[in-house]
Every structure is written in structure tokens, then in C-alpha cells.
Amino acid sequence: MAKKRKRKAAKSKCCKSINCKVGLALGLLFALGHAIWALLVAIIPKGMQKFCDWILGISMVKMTFTIQPFALTNAILLVIVTFVCGYVFGWVFSAILSWSMKK
Image 1 (tube, helix red, strand yellow):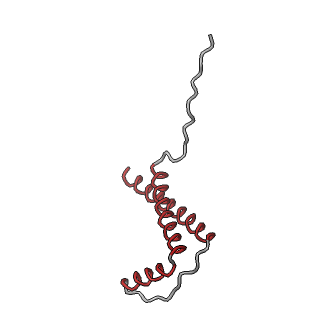
Image 2: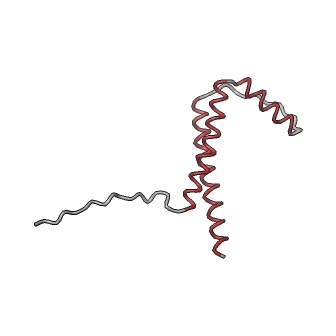
Image 3: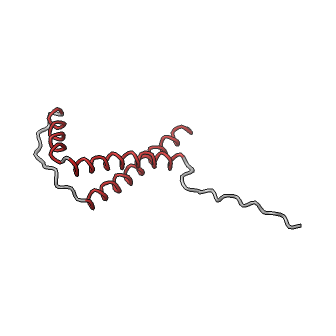
């Protein structure tokens, strides 16, 4: 009688380290924040201009700038770049923290 072989589910090796998990979490947080920003710029650009002017005003900063019209390609690029930056920042932070905890 032939033995039945049980197929083991292939476990993904993706993101098993804590560094990777922290990187993904921070990357997603950064990307989500900027995706919300891009969505708000698409929906209410004048309101976001007033918000930025207000934030700079309470920070005692006088700067002249204008929010440009919404562009989908720029919004997608913004979300991708901030995800990558957040991932790298989270990974490096976690690696340094892990290294310092070992000592």
C-alpha cells in the first residue's frame, strides 16, 4: 500500500524577521498617510491650502507656496516613495534597536 504523502503548505519566507515587520508597518503607515493627503488634495484642494497655511502660521513660519492641481501619477509616485522610505527607516531602526538590545 502506497503511503499518502501529506503536502505541507509552502510557508512564505517573506517577512519573518522583526526588522522586516517593523519596516512594513512603518512603510504602510507612511504610505497610508500620504494616500489620505493625496485624496484630500484631489477632493478639497483649497481646503488643504488653507490647512497648510494654518499649520505654518501656528509654527511661526512665513512661506509662500501653493498646492498644485491633483495628478494621479504624482499621487501614486508619492505613495510608493513614502512606503519605500518608511520601510527603510523602520528596518534600520529595528535593526539598530535589536543590535543594541543584544549588548
